[in-house]
Amino acid sequence: MNKLHFSLKIAFTFFSIGTILFLIQLIINKITLVTFIGLYYVLFAAILNCLIVITLLITLIFDKNRKSILKSLVIIASNIPIALIYFIIVINYAI
Image (tube, rainbow, N blue to C red; front, side):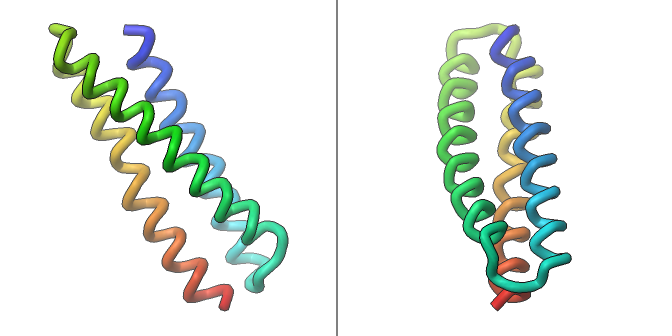
């Protein structure tokens, strides 16, 4: 159960930080240090989120609390399209 709580905190934290970086980038409206920080942040977040998804999938196989694990997987996985949309907007908007 501790893994589930941790994964939800991670998902919310990555979403919040990503949204803040996205909004700052939109306000600045050009390629700056924030752009590069955001790109490295997306890479780091993707790697960590993939590790969490793998951990949750393994937990799903062995744990009986499948409903809450699936909820956590959906929440973590929802960050992927959001990050992709942010990335596409920044690339098209900042360049």
